[in-house]
Length: 470
Image 1 (cartoon, one colour):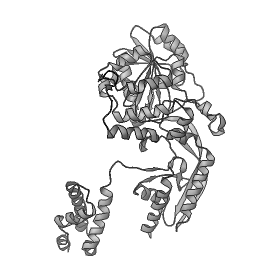
Image 2 (cartoon, helix red, strand yellow; image 1 turned 120 degrees about the horizontal axis):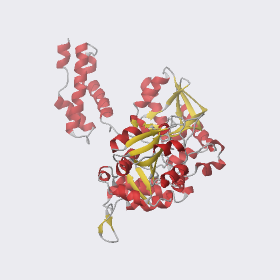
Image 3 (cartoon, one colour; image 1 turned 90 degrees about the horizontal axis):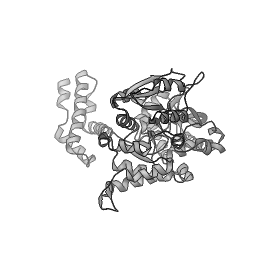
Image 4 (spheres, rainbow, N blue to C red; image 1 turned 30 degrees about the vertical axis):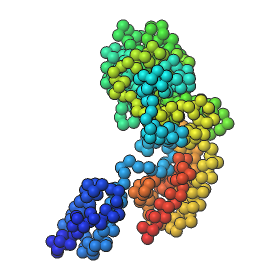
C-alpha cells in the first residue's frame, strides 16, 4: 500500500510550476528547497502509515503545500506584537525608535551621506563628530565616543586605560547581564586585572584606599541597573570615589549599564505612580567627577543599540585612537538614529512625547484603562471569546529599574475549548506573532506596549483562530 502512495506523489517539476504562480517573488532555489522539505515530510508520513490516499489528491495536496510554504517563506526576522507589558524587552528588540530616528535611518540608507566626510574642509572626517557635540551638550562631558554596544564600550575603555594593570571594583558590583556576560569576563578579555574589594553587601572607602598600589590603573564603579541589594548594605558615593581617584591621579570609570539622560524625579512629580523612581543620570555622574562613563543607547535612552562613552577629553582621545575602535565602531544607520534621538533630548517635552520608550514609561493609567476597555470590547464581539479588563503591573525591562513596577491594565482572554497555553501557542504562530503572558491561569495582553495600529490586527488574528478552530 505504501509503495502505491509513493507513486501518487506529484513531481517536483509540477509542484514548482504550480507554486511559482502563488509565490512569484520567491527565488526558484529557495522555493524548490522548501518544497523538497515538505515532500520529505510527506514521505515520512507514508512510511509510518499516518497519511491516507485522500491527502495526496492534487487539490488537497497543493493547498496543504501552499499553507506550508506561506509559513516557511516568511522572513526569519519579523514584526511581533508586544503584549507582555515589558517596555525594553531584550528578546523583542528593546526600545522602539522615534519616528524622527526612523526617518533619519531611511534617509541614510536611501542616499550617500557625509558619514566620514567633512563638508567644511572637503576632506575625510570623523563619523563620531555627528553625535559628539550633542552628547557633550546634553551630558556636560568634555568628549564622547560611540561604539556598537555597552559591552564593547566597557571592553575598549578598560583595554585602553588599564591593560595589564589592576582595576579596583566592589564585589557587590560584579554584575552579570543578559546572555551570561559578566563584568569579570569582559575585564579579563580587555587585559585588565580585576581587584575585588569589600563584600557582596558592604564596601567602604577604606577598602578602595587599601587596595590602591603601584599597579593600579583605575577605580571602577558599576551601576547595578538590573538588580538591587537591600537591607544591611553600604556603598561608596561617586563623589567620594572621584576625590580618591583624583588624589592618586587615577581615572574613575563608571559602567552605568542602561543609562539615563533625564531626571525621573523631576518628570514624575505630577505622577503619584512614578514618585518612587530613583535612577541616576549621566549628568549627575559627570558633575560628581567621574572621568569615563559608558552606557547603552537602546535602553532608557530609547535609541538604537549603541555603547556610548562620555567623559574627560584626555581619556576619550586615548580610547578613540585604540585600534580596537575599528572593530567595534557603529554604522551609518545607528549614527543616524542616535543623532535624531539625541536631538529630541534638547527639548524635554518633545523627548517624553516622541521617544516611544519614555512615552510608554510615563503613560497614564487612565489612558491604559481606556485602551484595554476598547480592545476587550472588540474581542467580546467575536464568538466563543470572553474578554475583560483587570489591573496589574508592568516592568520597564532591559535590566532597568528592576524593583520598579508600573500600574497597568490587562485584557484577560478566554476562548472556548482552548487552554491558556494553547492560546499562547496559536498566537506565536500568527502573522504577525502576538506575545502575551499567562497570569492567574488566564492568557492576558498587557496594553502598555500595544500600538494603536496593533489593535485591529489583534482582533483579526483572533477571528482567524476561531475560524480555524471551528
